[in-house]
Image (cartoon, rainbow, N blue to C red; front, side, top):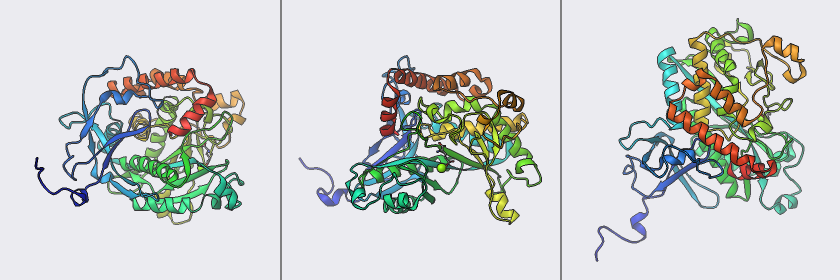
Length: 455
Ligand code: GLU
Ligand code: MG
Protein backbone atom coordinates (compact mmCIF):
# COMPACT_ATOMS: atom_id res chain seq x y z
CA UNK A 1 0.00 0.00 0.00
CA UNK A 2 1.37 3.43 -0.79
CA UNK A 3 0.47 6.47 1.28
CA UNK A 4 0.37 9.91 -0.29
CA UNK A 5 3.01 12.48 0.61
CA UNK A 6 6.19 12.23 2.67
CA UNK A 7 6.37 10.03 5.77
CA UNK A 8 8.71 9.95 8.73
CA UNK A 9 9.76 12.62 11.25
CA UNK A 10 9.88 15.55 8.84
CA UNK A 11 6.29 15.14 7.69
CA UNK A 12 4.62 16.28 10.88
CA UNK A 13 7.24 18.78 12.00
CA UNK A 14 5.22 21.79 10.92
CA UNK A 15 2.15 20.61 12.77
CA UNK A 16 1.32 20.57 16.43
CA UNK A 17 -1.67 19.70 18.52
CA UNK A 18 -3.92 22.70 18.97
CA UNK A 19 -6.27 22.55 21.94
CA UNK A 20 -9.76 23.94 21.40
CA UNK A 21 -10.67 25.26 24.82
CA UNK A 22 -14.04 26.20 26.19
CA UNK A 23 -14.89 27.14 29.77
CA UNK A 24 -18.07 25.25 30.52
CA UNK A 25 -21.00 26.53 32.54
CA UNK A 26 -19.52 24.94 35.66
CA UNK A 27 -16.32 26.98 35.21
CA UNK A 28 -14.14 24.06 34.12
CA UNK A 29 -11.89 24.39 31.05
CA UNK A 30 -12.59 21.51 28.71
CA UNK A 31 -12.06 20.83 25.01
CA UNK A 32 -10.24 18.71 22.48
CA UNK A 33 -7.05 19.06 20.48
CA UNK A 34 -6.86 18.90 16.71
CA UNK A 35 -3.94 17.72 14.61
CA UNK A 36 -5.22 19.41 11.50
CA UNK A 37 -2.94 21.84 9.67
CA UNK A 38 -3.48 25.50 10.62
CA UNK A 39 -6.62 26.82 9.01
CA UNK A 40 -8.04 23.37 8.27
CA UNK A 41 -10.09 23.42 11.48
CA UNK A 42 -11.65 26.78 10.63
CA UNK A 43 -15.12 25.19 10.64
CA UNK A 44 -14.47 24.14 14.23
CA UNK A 45 -14.08 20.75 15.85
CA UNK A 46 -16.96 18.60 17.07
CA UNK A 47 -18.52 19.10 20.50
CA UNK A 48 -21.36 17.57 22.43
CA UNK A 49 -24.15 19.79 23.83
CA UNK A 50 -24.64 17.74 26.98
CA UNK A 51 -21.12 18.75 28.03
CA UNK A 52 -22.62 22.07 29.16
CA UNK A 53 -24.39 20.29 32.02
CA UNK A 54 -21.44 18.33 33.40
CA UNK A 55 -20.81 19.55 36.93
CA UNK A 56 -17.27 20.26 38.13
CA UNK A 57 -17.53 16.88 39.93
CA UNK A 58 -18.14 15.28 36.51
CA UNK A 59 -21.76 14.27 37.08
CA UNK A 60 -24.04 14.84 34.10
CA UNK A 61 -27.24 16.57 35.21
CA UNK A 62 -30.15 14.23 34.60
CA UNK A 63 -33.34 15.51 32.87
CA UNK A 64 -31.16 17.69 30.63
CA UNK A 65 -32.56 18.64 27.21
CA UNK A 66 -29.88 16.87 25.14
CA UNK A 67 -28.95 13.47 26.54
CA UNK A 68 -27.02 11.50 23.96
CA UNK A 69 -28.46 13.54 21.12
CA UNK A 70 -27.06 16.42 19.10
CA UNK A 71 -23.84 18.02 17.97
CA UNK A 72 -22.20 21.42 18.17
CA UNK A 73 -18.82 22.77 17.06
CA UNK A 74 -16.00 24.46 18.95
CA UNK A 75 -15.10 27.47 16.80
CA UNK A 76 -11.65 28.79 17.68
CA UNK A 77 -11.11 32.53 17.98
CA UNK A 78 -7.62 32.89 16.43
CA UNK A 79 -7.01 36.14 18.36
CA UNK A 80 -6.85 34.05 21.57
CA UNK A 81 -4.14 31.67 20.41
CA UNK A 82 -1.38 30.83 22.86
CA UNK A 83 1.67 28.70 22.06
CA UNK A 84 4.05 28.09 24.97
CA UNK A 85 6.68 25.53 25.81
CA UNK A 86 6.59 24.77 29.52
CA UNK A 87 9.68 24.27 31.70
CA UNK A 88 9.28 20.47 31.48
CA UNK A 89 9.17 20.55 27.65
CA UNK A 90 5.40 20.12 27.25
CA UNK A 91 3.85 22.31 24.61
CA UNK A 92 0.67 24.23 25.39
CA UNK A 93 -0.86 25.42 22.17
CA UNK A 94 -4.51 26.36 22.00
CA UNK A 95 -7.31 28.75 21.22
CA UNK A 96 -10.37 29.79 23.15
CA UNK A 97 -13.60 28.84 21.38
CA UNK A 98 -17.23 29.72 21.10
CA UNK A 99 -19.62 26.79 20.98
CA UNK A 100 -21.59 27.16 17.76
CA UNK A 101 -24.35 25.36 15.85
CA UNK A 102 -23.27 23.04 13.03
CA UNK A 103 -23.81 25.83 10.47
CA UNK A 104 -21.52 28.14 12.48
CA UNK A 105 -24.30 30.33 13.92
CA UNK A 106 -24.12 31.22 17.64
CA UNK A 107 -25.45 28.72 20.18
CA UNK A 108 -27.58 30.30 22.91
CA UNK A 109 -26.03 28.09 25.60
CA UNK A 110 -22.45 29.31 24.94
CA UNK A 111 -21.15 31.45 27.82
CA UNK A 112 -18.69 33.41 25.66
CA UNK A 113 -21.53 34.27 23.27
CA UNK A 114 -23.59 35.45 26.26
CA UNK A 115 -20.83 37.91 27.22
CA UNK A 116 -20.33 39.05 23.62
CA UNK A 117 -24.06 39.77 23.30
CA UNK A 118 -24.15 41.73 26.58
CA UNK A 119 -21.19 43.82 25.37
CA UNK A 120 -22.92 44.41 22.03
CA UNK A 121 -26.04 45.66 23.84
CA UNK A 122 -23.90 48.07 25.87
CA UNK A 123 -22.21 49.28 22.70
CA UNK A 124 -25.37 49.60 20.60
CA UNK A 125 -27.75 50.98 23.21
CA UNK A 126 -25.38 53.20 25.16
CA UNK A 127 -22.30 53.66 22.93
CA UNK A 128 -20.11 52.29 25.72
CA UNK A 129 -17.39 49.67 26.06
CA UNK A 130 -15.89 47.95 29.08
CA UNK A 131 -12.26 47.64 30.10
CA UNK A 132 -11.85 44.90 32.71
CA UNK A 133 -9.38 42.77 34.57
CA UNK A 134 -9.83 39.70 36.77
CA UNK A 135 -7.49 39.86 39.77
CA UNK A 136 -6.78 36.33 40.97
CA UNK A 137 -5.71 35.03 44.36
CA UNK A 138 -4.51 31.44 44.44
CA UNK A 139 -2.85 28.75 46.50
CA UNK A 140 0.59 27.51 45.63
CA UNK A 141 1.73 24.35 47.36
CA UNK A 142 4.84 22.32 46.78
CA UNK A 143 4.02 18.73 45.92
CA UNK A 144 7.22 17.65 47.71
CA UNK A 145 8.35 20.07 50.36
CA UNK A 146 11.97 18.92 50.79
CA UNK A 147 13.41 21.45 48.33
CA UNK A 148 11.78 24.33 50.18
CA UNK A 149 12.96 22.96 53.51
CA UNK A 150 16.52 22.63 52.17
CA UNK A 151 16.50 26.29 51.20
CA UNK A 152 15.17 27.29 54.61
CA UNK A 153 12.09 28.92 53.13
CA UNK A 154 8.49 27.86 52.95
CA UNK A 155 5.34 29.48 51.83
CA UNK A 156 3.98 29.50 55.38
CA UNK A 157 6.30 32.44 56.10
CA UNK A 158 4.42 35.57 57.30
CA UNK A 159 1.75 37.09 55.08
CA UNK A 160 3.02 39.56 52.43
CA UNK A 161 6.61 38.86 53.56
CA UNK A 162 9.80 38.80 51.51
CA UNK A 163 10.47 35.29 52.82
CA UNK A 164 7.12 34.08 51.52
CA UNK A 165 7.84 35.74 48.19
CA UNK A 166 11.28 34.14 47.94
CA UNK A 167 9.93 30.74 49.00
CA UNK A 168 8.32 30.31 45.61
CA UNK A 169 10.98 31.92 43.39
CA UNK A 170 11.76 31.42 40.56
CA UNK A 171 8.20 30.18 40.01
CA UNK A 172 6.71 33.69 39.99
CA UNK A 173 9.36 35.18 37.70
CA UNK A 174 9.02 32.31 35.25
CA UNK A 175 5.26 32.48 35.38
CA UNK A 176 5.26 36.21 34.62
CA UNK A 177 7.53 35.55 31.64
CA UNK A 178 5.15 32.87 30.36
CA UNK A 179 2.15 35.16 30.79
CA UNK A 180 4.05 37.90 28.97
CA UNK A 181 4.94 35.53 26.10
CA UNK A 182 1.28 34.53 25.91
CA UNK A 183 0.37 38.21 25.40
CA UNK A 184 -1.50 38.53 28.69
CA UNK A 185 0.40 41.61 29.95
CA UNK A 186 0.96 40.53 33.57
CA UNK A 187 1.48 43.29 36.13
CA UNK A 188 1.86 42.05 39.70
CA UNK A 189 2.78 38.90 41.59
CA UNK A 190 2.47 39.08 45.36
CA UNK A 191 2.51 36.98 48.48
CA UNK A 192 -1.00 37.28 49.99
CA UNK A 193 -2.08 37.04 53.61
CA UNK A 194 -2.76 33.33 54.16
CA UNK A 195 -0.07 30.62 54.13
CA UNK A 196 0.53 29.36 50.56
CA UNK A 197 -1.57 32.22 49.15
CA UNK A 198 -0.40 34.41 46.26
CA UNK A 199 -2.01 36.84 43.86
CA UNK A 200 -1.42 37.76 40.26
CA UNK A 201 -2.80 40.65 38.26
CA UNK A 202 -2.94 41.44 34.56
CA UNK A 203 -3.37 44.63 32.60
CA UNK A 204 -7.07 45.13 31.80
CA UNK A 205 -8.41 44.03 28.44
CA UNK A 206 -11.32 45.29 26.34
CA UNK A 207 -14.57 43.39 26.62
CA UNK A 208 -14.38 39.68 25.98
CA UNK A 209 -10.58 39.70 25.99
CA UNK A 210 -10.64 40.38 29.75
CA UNK A 211 -12.38 37.05 30.34
CA UNK A 212 -10.12 35.31 27.78
CA UNK A 213 -7.11 36.61 29.71
CA UNK A 214 -8.54 35.26 32.96
CA UNK A 215 -8.98 31.81 31.40
CA UNK A 216 -5.46 31.66 30.01
CA UNK A 217 -3.86 33.18 33.11
CA UNK A 218 -5.37 30.51 35.37
CA UNK A 219 -4.56 27.70 32.93
CA UNK A 220 -0.96 28.83 32.44
CA UNK A 221 -0.47 29.26 36.19
CA UNK A 222 -1.75 25.75 36.85
CA UNK A 223 0.24 24.00 34.14
CA UNK A 224 3.39 26.00 34.96
CA UNK A 225 3.02 24.93 38.58
CA UNK A 226 2.52 21.30 37.68
CA UNK A 227 5.59 21.35 35.47
CA UNK A 228 7.82 22.57 38.31
CA UNK A 229 6.67 20.48 41.27
CA UNK A 230 3.88 22.72 42.56
CA UNK A 231 0.14 22.64 42.63
CA UNK A 232 -1.61 25.95 41.92
CA UNK A 233 -5.28 26.10 42.85
CA UNK A 234 -7.73 28.96 42.46
CA UNK A 235 -10.34 27.33 44.72
CA UNK A 236 -12.17 29.89 46.87
CA UNK A 237 -11.40 28.26 50.21
CA UNK A 238 -9.46 25.25 51.50
CA UNK A 239 -11.19 24.62 54.82
CA UNK A 240 -14.18 25.88 56.69
CA UNK A 241 -13.27 29.04 58.57
CA UNK A 242 -10.10 29.48 56.51
CA UNK A 243 -9.08 32.53 54.53
CA UNK A 244 -10.58 32.83 51.07
CA UNK A 245 -9.07 33.35 47.64
CA UNK A 246 -11.17 35.76 45.65
CA UNK A 247 -11.44 36.89 42.08
CA UNK A 248 -11.88 40.63 42.10
CA UNK A 249 -13.38 41.84 38.84
CA UNK A 250 -12.18 45.37 38.09
CA UNK A 251 -13.92 47.31 35.35
CA UNK A 252 -14.43 50.77 33.90
CA UNK A 253 -16.64 52.29 31.19
CA UNK A 254 -15.32 54.04 28.09
CA UNK A 255 -17.02 55.72 25.16
CA UNK A 256 -16.48 54.39 21.65
CA UNK A 257 -13.80 57.02 20.97
CA UNK A 258 -11.72 55.59 23.81
CA UNK A 259 -12.48 58.23 26.47
CA UNK A 260 -13.04 57.06 30.06
CA UNK A 261 -16.56 57.98 31.26
CA UNK A 262 -16.86 56.36 34.71
CA UNK A 263 -15.28 59.19 36.65
CA UNK A 264 -16.51 62.65 37.57
CA UNK A 265 -14.32 64.19 40.25
CA UNK A 266 -17.07 66.65 41.15
CA UNK A 267 -19.60 63.91 42.03
CA UNK A 268 -20.00 62.03 45.29
CA UNK A 269 -17.50 59.16 45.38
CA UNK A 270 -16.19 60.34 42.00
CA UNK A 271 -18.74 58.39 39.96
CA UNK A 272 -20.11 60.03 36.83
CA UNK A 273 -23.88 60.02 36.28
CA UNK A 274 -23.64 57.06 33.92
CA UNK A 275 -21.20 55.32 36.26
CA UNK A 276 -23.57 55.77 39.22
CA UNK A 277 -26.48 54.32 37.22
CA UNK A 278 -24.35 51.35 36.10
CA UNK A 279 -23.24 50.73 39.71
CA UNK A 280 -26.86 51.21 40.85
CA UNK A 281 -27.88 48.36 38.53
CA UNK A 282 -25.26 46.09 40.05
CA UNK A 283 -26.32 47.08 43.57
CA UNK A 284 -29.97 46.29 42.86
CA UNK A 285 -29.23 42.79 41.55
CA UNK A 286 -26.43 41.76 43.94
CA UNK A 287 -28.10 38.60 45.33
CA UNK A 288 -28.94 37.25 41.86
CA UNK A 289 -25.47 38.14 40.56
CA UNK A 290 -23.90 35.97 43.26
CA UNK A 291 -25.43 32.91 41.57
CA UNK A 292 -23.16 33.65 38.58
CA UNK A 293 -20.07 35.11 40.24
CA UNK A 294 -19.86 32.93 43.38
CA UNK A 295 -21.47 29.78 42.06
CA UNK A 296 -20.26 26.88 44.17
CA UNK A 297 -21.16 25.51 47.57
CA UNK A 298 -17.82 26.56 49.02
CA UNK A 299 -18.10 30.07 47.54
CA UNK A 300 -20.33 30.74 50.55
CA UNK A 301 -17.67 29.62 53.01
CA UNK A 302 -15.68 32.58 51.66
CA UNK A 303 -18.49 35.15 51.47
CA UNK A 304 -18.80 35.61 55.21
CA UNK A 305 -18.66 38.81 57.25
CA UNK A 306 -15.42 40.37 58.30
CA UNK A 307 -13.27 38.46 55.83
CA UNK A 308 -12.41 41.16 53.28
CA UNK A 309 -14.51 39.23 50.79
CA UNK A 310 -18.15 40.42 50.63
CA UNK A 311 -21.10 39.48 52.80
CA UNK A 312 -23.60 42.32 52.41
CA UNK A 313 -25.34 44.06 49.54
CA UNK A 314 -23.39 47.30 49.58
CA UNK A 315 -21.29 49.69 47.57
CA UNK A 316 -18.37 51.30 49.36
CA UNK A 317 -15.59 53.71 48.60
CA UNK A 318 -12.24 52.00 49.14
CA UNK A 319 -13.99 49.49 51.40
CA UNK A 320 -12.73 45.90 51.11
CA UNK A 321 -15.83 44.55 52.86
CA UNK A 322 -18.09 46.00 50.16
CA UNK A 323 -19.47 43.81 47.39
CA UNK A 324 -18.85 46.64 44.95
CA UNK A 325 -15.80 48.74 45.80
CA UNK A 326 -15.06 52.13 44.32
CA UNK A 327 -11.30 51.85 43.92
CA UNK A 328 -8.74 54.52 44.74
CA UNK A 329 -6.73 56.38 42.15
CA UNK A 330 -3.10 57.42 42.65
CA UNK A 331 -1.38 60.60 41.50
CA UNK A 332 -2.55 64.10 40.63
CA UNK A 333 -2.82 64.33 36.87
CA UNK A 334 -6.62 64.56 36.25
CA UNK A 335 -6.30 62.86 32.85
CA UNK A 336 -4.50 59.87 34.36
CA UNK A 337 -6.94 59.74 37.29
CA UNK A 338 -9.87 59.49 34.89
CA UNK A 339 -8.19 56.62 33.09
CA UNK A 340 -7.38 54.75 36.31
CA UNK A 341 -10.78 55.11 37.96
CA UNK A 342 -12.52 51.74 38.23
CA UNK A 343 -15.00 49.65 40.16
CA UNK A 344 -14.30 46.25 41.69
CA UNK A 345 -16.82 43.42 42.11
CA UNK A 346 -15.50 41.41 45.09
CA UNK A 347 -18.14 38.68 45.46
CA UNK A 348 -16.54 36.51 42.77
CA UNK A 349 -14.30 33.47 42.80
CA UNK A 350 -12.65 31.17 40.31
CA UNK A 351 -15.41 28.57 40.36
CA UNK A 352 -17.34 31.08 38.23
CA UNK A 353 -17.30 30.98 34.47
CA UNK A 354 -15.67 34.38 33.76
CA UNK A 355 -17.82 34.95 30.65
CA UNK A 356 -21.05 34.39 32.58
CA UNK A 357 -19.76 36.47 35.49
CA UNK A 358 -18.71 39.49 33.41
CA UNK A 359 -21.75 39.13 31.13
CA UNK A 360 -24.07 39.20 34.15
CA UNK A 361 -22.28 42.22 35.66
CA UNK A 362 -22.54 44.09 32.34
CA UNK A 363 -26.22 43.11 32.01
CA UNK A 364 -26.96 44.43 35.51
CA UNK A 365 -25.12 47.65 34.66
CA UNK A 366 -27.15 48.08 31.46
CA UNK A 367 -30.29 47.56 33.52
CA UNK A 368 -29.08 50.36 35.81
CA UNK A 369 -28.44 52.75 32.91
CA UNK A 370 -31.76 51.93 31.20
CA UNK A 371 -33.83 52.45 34.32
CA UNK A 372 -31.63 55.16 35.86
CA UNK A 373 -31.07 53.21 39.05
CA UNK A 374 -29.81 55.31 41.92
CA UNK A 375 -26.53 54.55 43.63
CA UNK A 376 -27.41 53.32 47.15
CA UNK A 377 -25.92 55.15 50.15
CA UNK A 378 -22.21 54.36 50.31
CA UNK A 379 -21.04 52.11 53.12
CA UNK A 380 -17.47 52.96 53.98
CA UNK A 381 -17.06 50.70 56.99
CA UNK A 382 -17.44 46.98 57.67
CA UNK A 383 -21.22 46.43 57.37
CA UNK A 384 -21.02 43.51 59.81
CA UNK A 385 -20.12 46.10 62.48
CA UNK A 386 -23.42 47.97 61.99
CA UNK A 387 -26.60 47.17 63.88
CA UNK A 388 -29.57 45.62 62.08
CA UNK A 389 -31.33 49.00 62.26
CA UNK A 390 -28.35 50.83 60.80
CA UNK A 391 -28.08 48.31 57.98
CA UNK A 392 -31.83 48.54 57.40
CA UNK A 393 -31.66 52.33 57.15
CA UNK A 394 -28.93 52.01 54.51
CA UNK A 395 -30.78 49.28 52.59
CA UNK A 396 -27.96 46.84 53.32
CA UNK A 397 -28.87 43.15 53.43
CA UNK A 398 -26.96 39.93 53.87
CA UNK A 399 -25.89 38.42 50.53
CA UNK A 400 -27.15 34.86 49.95
CA UNK A 401 -25.40 32.59 52.43
CA UNK A 402 -25.45 29.40 50.37
CA UNK A 403 -25.49 28.28 46.75
CA UNK A 404 -29.17 27.23 46.91
CA UNK A 405 -30.03 30.68 48.37
CA UNK A 406 -28.14 32.41 45.53
CA UNK A 407 -29.88 30.25 42.90
CA UNK A 408 -33.19 31.08 44.58
CA UNK A 409 -32.35 34.80 44.35
CA UNK A 410 -31.63 34.42 40.63
CA UNK A 411 -34.89 32.51 40.09
CA UNK A 412 -36.78 35.21 42.00
CA UNK A 413 -35.27 38.15 40.06
CA UNK A 414 -37.37 38.58 36.89
CA UNK A 415 -35.10 41.24 35.46
CA UNK A 416 -31.96 39.15 36.00
CA UNK A 417 -33.61 36.11 34.43
CA UNK A 418 -34.43 38.19 31.35
CA UNK A 419 -30.71 38.74 30.62
CA UNK A 420 -30.31 35.10 29.61
CA UNK A 421 -31.66 33.11 26.69
CA UNK A 422 -34.02 30.61 28.30
CA UNK A 423 -32.04 27.48 27.33
CA UNK A 424 -28.89 28.97 28.87
CA UNK A 425 -30.62 29.90 32.11
CA UNK A 426 -32.35 26.52 32.37
CA UNK A 427 -29.11 24.62 31.69
CA UNK A 428 -27.24 26.73 34.22
CA UNK A 429 -29.81 26.31 37.00
CA UNK A 430 -30.08 22.58 36.33
CA UNK A 431 -26.30 22.21 36.43
CA UNK A 432 -25.90 24.21 39.63
CA UNK A 433 -28.79 22.44 41.37
CA UNK A 434 -27.23 19.10 40.44
CA UNK A 435 -23.88 20.29 41.78
CA UNK A 436 -25.43 21.55 45.04
CA UNK A 437 -27.23 18.21 45.51
CA UNK A 438 -24.03 16.23 44.89
CA UNK A 439 -22.15 18.41 47.39
CA UNK A 440 -24.86 17.89 50.00
CA UNK A 441 -23.78 14.22 50.09
CA UNK A 442 -20.14 15.17 50.84
CA UNK A 443 -18.54 16.62 53.95
CA UNK A 444 -17.28 20.18 53.72
CA UNK A 445 -13.69 18.94 54.00
CA UNK A 446 -14.26 16.55 51.11
CA UNK A 447 -15.79 19.31 48.94
CA UNK A 448 -12.84 21.59 49.72
CA UNK A 449 -10.39 18.81 48.83
CA UNK A 450 -12.14 18.00 45.54
CA UNK A 451 -12.52 21.65 44.46
CA UNK A 452 -8.88 22.34 45.25
CA UNK A 453 -7.83 19.85 42.58
CA UNK A 454 -10.57 20.82 40.10
CA UNK A 455 -10.01 24.59 40.23
N1 GLU B 1 -8.66 37.18 50.21
C1 GLU B 1 -9.73 38.17 50.18
C2 GLU B 1 -10.92 37.58 49.43
O1 GLU B 1 -11.29 36.49 49.71
C3 GLU B 1 -9.30 39.48 49.54
C4 GLU B 1 -8.13 40.15 50.18
C5 GLU B 1 -7.71 41.40 49.40
O2 GLU B 1 -8.43 42.40 49.45
O3 GLU B 1 -6.72 41.32 48.68
O4 GLU B 1 -11.50 38.19 48.57
MG1 MG C 1 -5.64 40.25 47.30
